[in-house]
Image 1 (tube, rainbow, N blue to C red):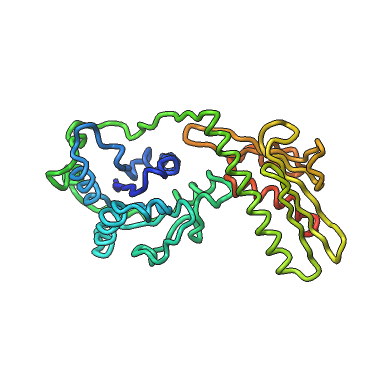
Image 2 (image 1 turned 45 degrees about the vertical axis):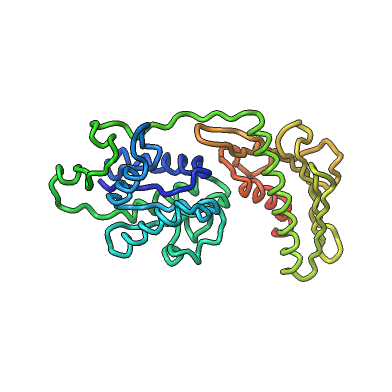
Length: 315
């Protein structure tokens, strides 16, 4: 059984929890045991216990984000020692890119990061798909079993191991269901709308720059509304308005016209939650799209609406 160590910023705890859920199958198959600092108990020596687990880890996951890079402890203690062990062949370090950041110049930047193509997890349309990709790549990177006495494998590698290691077996399934307030949901929805607005503005600019005969118009009407129009040879081919709130009174609505004051809509994104975090889910109103079961990130919601805008140009 391989020991997997999570090195992360506490600001990314929700994403770490989701990753641990994605690794559940490997735990149940007896392939891995996972460890992070939340395994320490009240009264444990944090520094000794933490470093002991880092020393015995077979796989060290660096959960990379702007906050991870900004953390002196993550950089100077966790990452530095992890890379030393990686260079000596004592452990395998795997960068898991949680959020977009400048990670390639870092000491671990020469390593192949996951998910696929190093695309940050929060930039994937579907969180479940992103974590599945990560889990599959971690599985493929696990060290091959070595012939060693079972007792030797289970024994603590140093005298500084945390006290919990000597207290007998216990479950690694210690996560509790998280709850989210109305303020949490409203904040998530507002942030998602702002992301979608920036996404559309940037995509429209690039669409016009790359295609002859294409003109675009992005208008931010107010804090809760924007419109977009795509012209081909001067003729409007596709229009839309995106509204925070809108006809249903909640969520982010999409209408296939640029009259944001109308009460029509073709799709709506609403905020939902599971045990570990918040996400967007579409009503599935648009034809030929079965996205209502997907847990969408703001990126996923933006991609859904973008496809609805430009599909007429791609026929």
